[in-house]
Amino acid sequence: MNVIKKYNILIAGARGRDLQNFIVYFRDNPLYNVVCFTATQIPGIENQFVPKEITGKLYPRGIPTYPESQLQELIKKHNIDYVYLSYSDLSHQYVMEFASKVLAAGANFALLGTRDTYIQSKKPVISVTAVRTGSGKSQTTRAIAEIFKKQGKKVVGIRHPMPYGDLVQQEVQRFETTADLKKNKCTIEEEEEYQPWIDHGFVIYAGVDYQKIIKQAEKEADVILWDGGNNDWSFYKPDLNIVVADPHRAGHELTYYPGFVNILMADIVIINKVDSVSKENVQKVQANIKKYNPQAKIILAKSDVFVEDPKVVKNKRVLVVGDGPTLSHGGMSFGAATLAAQKYGGKIVDVKPFVIGSIKQTYQKYPQLGKELPAMGYSSKQLKEVEQIINKVPCDLILDGSPAHLKKHLKLKKPIMDVTYELDQKSVKVLEKLLKKFL
Image (cartoon, rainbow, N blue to C red; front, side, top):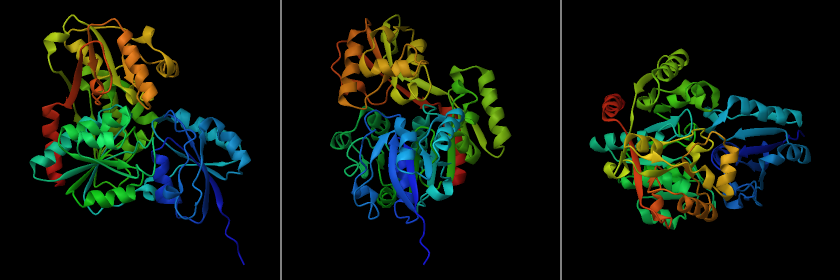
């Protein structure tokens, strides 16, 4: 009698792609024994246990998670056969350094591809992904949703996961009103992604089990719009693949995983923010896209920034606050708030001398950070640190470029004004013509 060998598996992730890969590929597969997960990027998830309600019948005790720093030790201790790297926004250099650690410890290094990780939907799916975090996916998905709304189509968004809390309670999440954010105990990072959908009157789903999520979303949608996270590819097989590139990080479209995968699969590439960067950078991104995916249609887009009352900004000492992931592992030194301050004549105050606690550690970990404060809010403690920092900075006005509306969450001693940003109307019209062909 032949005994089938079960391969011992370690999945390295950050509570997004790792859970998707597990649920779709490994959970019910008798050939594999997933021993553990490792976690990085997101504070506070390193020792989070994946419960049996998520892991299924082959794992009645659930599966433990350990810090990625223990990777090589775990490979040797548990006789790991394969390590599957399952998170995103990584330089190709980092990916191979990670792989080398795995190989040196005795295991095989692996990546799962699109065929084994896509979920098929019964409804048309448009995916919006990116080359890097912070390229402009959210404003692109909003523009697409509005285009379909004008055509009388019911658009439902599904967002890349951010399950940092109770995984069972977060298995399927539906957001239609601000009350849903509170009900689901969302972090600032989650609210930054869901709030704009709510503000524009659309329903957005997220969670843990995207097989269950799509079944529920299909009941109320004519079109599914995948709102990607980081630079990961879609969890659902797209009928139209739209990728956003950022010329502020020209060249990264070829050198970051899995952003380069997205470029190779793109039907449409939107090169965003062309109004705030050199022509040389835009041309470099264009040339790279044409070289590796000459069939892709390219749209050059501006990212228009707005504030409620521009006159208030002029000549004021301004503290600028931006989207946390974009300014941290996204590699940007500034965001929309800085552009708004420059556009409307504000004098930006350097926040670095006033940072404390985990935010100070963020500045140490990401040395590219400039004067803009990343709105890190993965926990209530971290959010409190952001509040303390803002209140210490000598300024006249706070410009909040994070989509989460910080004034709802913080007790601030100074006036605060939201910064909004949208794709310019010329680009939206070009996009609308292409989407009409899709319809």
